[in-house]
Image 1 (cartoon, rainbow, N blue to C red):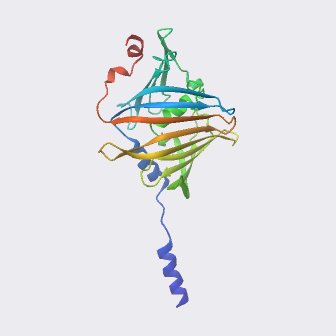
Image 2: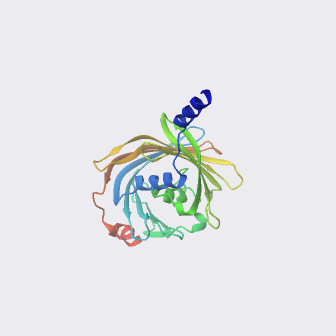
Image 3: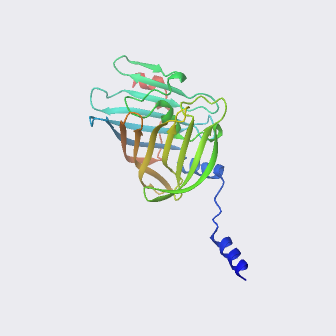
Length: 258
């Protein structure tokens, strides 16, 4: 009788966790849009406390180069000494993304070599590789393992390990991911180098609905460099999803002649 009671309790108390690949597919679908615009303001904070703030306009457009590939244009609007500077990311499926940096003083665009993807974007703790990965998770390039569940910033989340598949060119040897259970957005990421050292921590907060289409977005993110003590904080505002974006904007010609 006691054995039977124990078996019943065990059956009803055991939580069946979803498959890791199903969680990541849900995450990719949760971030999917046809287009998105908005403003972001980032603040770089050095270990000593020195701050630098920049404001940008972002434009995102889904492309036909893959199932979940996007173009991203980031244009600086403030302060005046960097206004007009822009960066363009064109995602490619199963090959290196194209990325360009436009400098208005030179009136020309400079292509960012794949070997430079680990460089910091405009002095932030966010690299060019991070920019591309933030657009959509390249789930075909990684092997995922579900490690369990944890609470991040008061919200239940799935914890997963992401290991790059053989042949992938990346600055990271491993990532630990926390996917928000309610929205399937990325709540936190720990980035590790190829020697196992903890490099950076990404945290997303202030997750709220955007528009009436069932979309959610984090309105604040933070990237902490564990090695240097420097931090980049980003505040998002004015999100507009699937409201239409001019496809002509996503070219070096547009950046150089606008």
